[in-house]
Image (cartoon, rainbow, N blue to C red; front, side):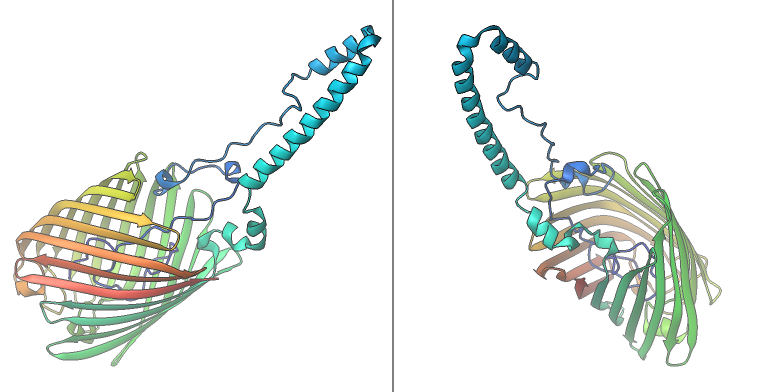
Length: 419
């Protein structure tokens, strides 16, 4: 089954997914930092970050004010003048008292400005969690996804994920449960994985995990290892993963396993232009193999109501053969088209909508009902989340894909809690 136009990350960390891969998920909504502090000017701004265009301007630190606006040398001049003329002592004293009054007024005004500019300092002291990077907080996530398509495949997936920092690592425990149903019956798989990730330096980090996949008739090992390198806004990620092929009940029953060798690249070329590219080579336990290439540049407009991204999508997939074993395996599938994505983020809620129009060119020996055929296609994704209380987010989404002779749909809901 082809992937949807966008994929929601069930985990906010960089570890590779080695459990159930949903066929299509909601668009990933960027969680902007809604907590602003008066000392933001002390933190360097990362222009390479995708959401940097939405960051507010930093507060400039003010230079200490002179009591009366005079230059430092004025006091020495005034002192010399007092020594030369005793007749001006009273006037000078009066002026000193006047200046002292001005000093107190200026100090009071300065204090008022400081109180206004840093009104949240006390709150920030009481809520230290606001200063902690969201990626470093322990989290609990629960996810439910329902998938169906015109080939009568129905997949129900539930996911539980717990993450926490441990001695410089971010560790996670994940459990996926899948029930797949088609015209031949139902199959179930339970996958449990223990994962980790760590940023070794500002340039590169590692991640991975291992676990087991248990079905009705088998118990198998799954695992993954990932390494990424970041430099001047560009990121290169290499991944090797071994997991189960869970596209349908037929594929689950056949106990088909896949080993994925992946390489991805992303770069923020400018404040508005970004690009992503991926290359995958997969080897299957039934003797099949596939190659996949994807490329997707975007141009983002920063609007008052949110972000609008217009992009181009290209993908190419080729399988060595079509075994008709319950998964889509075309000899060739080439797709290119245009996409539009609009996202917004507010203090209490956020959302994202994506639309895509493309043309698919497919060559397949087996039944074309297992996936898209040649012709124009369309895709859409909608996600909406609300922040119920501090640290708790509830998100729901819907995705749909269609092409001549085939269509699919996903709906899902997730609940995320950050400590």
